[in-house]
Image (cartoon, rainbow, N blue to C red; front, side, top):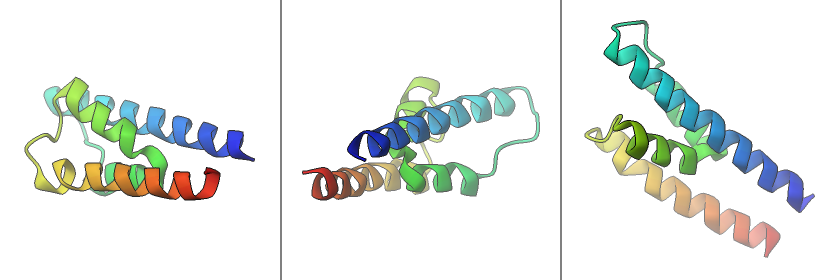
Length: 87
């Protein structure tokens, strides 16, 4: 069961990372964007680490307080919940 939770977190983080990259690409090319709500929901759903890495790697949403303040908090809360469940 613990392995499934870790795989879930990894998959959510990978998807969220990719969403940040795709949204950055769309922003540069003036395409229809991924809503901020979607990026935040994937982050809350377990992909906060991927979202934060996506912010750093793609330099995307780094000036939006909604993201640069909430993602570290989400990572902390997800880490605490993971520790309490697995630990």
